[in-house]
Image (cartoon, rainbow, N blue to C red; front, side):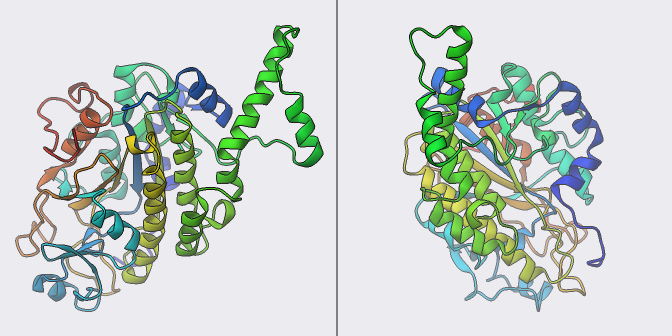
Length: 424
């Protein structure tokens, strides 16, 4: 396989995921704005202790062996003589493993006790197709076709409010589309108040007067709500002074040309918006964000380290910010990709489609350390790593431990949450 293969992006995956996307469109996925969300924060705020799940999808098949690196294993260096990292290059995690050198922020999260790594995660009879494998991960159904995502089914079984799950992308990903209920999308940007004297006048008119009739009072409340939006989320979107800036600048530097607001990467901007919504106690229980470009068939080391640096800056800035508030400490972040890569490097100094992969779980409610068995680099399945943890058990852990839901209606019988992964 060569680097002439088409780049796998979130949009290409959605285009090829016809059944699930069609289901989401048929249900009428709701596009919401900040005013809708902050209105709910006032009238039905997120309760203390109520878990929030943030799902980060890495499109393209991130190379797990280049992320959590078995640098001390001679079989790793033998399989990738030019692509392999030396032991001194990686950031030591223990047990002969190190994290990619571009992930200094997540190494600090590991050292601070806020990061767990579940090793060897996959599913039975793995498929090397991006679109089939990602569909399996997003639907939570490796053996039987289904038109619903795993979190879409959670929505189906727990109520019909589309604000309980929000995608930060403009198109709803399949994992958030149920059989009867679809989540919401929050497009980038949004309404803004005018600046200067006009803005001050607008704010002055946004007060509700006791003599206002119903229509005038509604207009005034809308203006007041928009002012609240500006106060809470304005710095995040404009890139002005605010708590997101330091992390955003770092993420923007790591991202190269993929910039969002204020020089931040698009992923960092999405996550800082999520953080602001959580801090405002918006009652949304699930958020979805994504980063693409991980289909590294050639020149993998340079490309992957750049992407992992972007991911690292966005995630570590997000985690640092969340750790500072009670609401933020209710968040657990799950990071996954559709598959890992082959153990052996190809002739283009990249790697081809593989199987098992590490999954990151991040947050104050996480028990830090390794979970699951590290896959052997010599006991392979036709050149692929053998999975030891079923991805549906990771999902069951999120459903029970974060969302307080029964996993059986969502994932079927026989799923076992990973013991100790989340603090009780």
